[in-house]
Length: 270
Image (cartoon, rainbow, N blue to C red; front, side, top):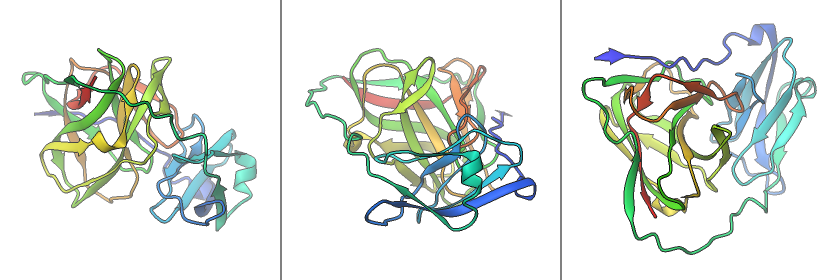
């Protein structure tokens, strides 16, 4: 078996050379913690994800400028210049306002037909395995799903796990509309947090209750949201399916991978 690693690197050992901002993300008004918030410098590989209690730690290397963005589903994003964000130092509190415009208009449709899209016929001769080489928070990788019909409702996600060396893996499943060939606006209104102890085999995630409707091509991805320590997670892949797109950190830049395609599929109804 040939094994590949997709090098989705984050910044390492930067705290000694810059500023580390720590704090907590809460909901304005209620004060409730906002978990698994995407925090990072827009377009740069400098980012993290808040914990289940809203706490975070973001290291900002010297010489870096730009905009820090903090975003979460259902909330208005917070933005500040890197220079201003550095001044917050330790124990800062970020308040996110609920976004009343985030709720999508619901149109009742009857989806009578079923299909399965993605890399549905992975080549046995060319089968390899690939995946994350580290678990930096906010690392994200996924695959473009070409729409054969529209609109469609997403029903179930499947991934063929080659091996999992964690006691329990936890990640966020994201779904984005495509814009200019790259992931754009999220199609979700709620976080889809997946936990599993599967070692090898088919990982399935039921999407039927999330009401996810795509109007064209879309992008499915997995994102690390918790520090799991040393381990490893690889999925089966080959060279013939839809392209892989990755980013190294929350709010970072998307990068296309030309060679491999994961054994990811999604069941849809139309």
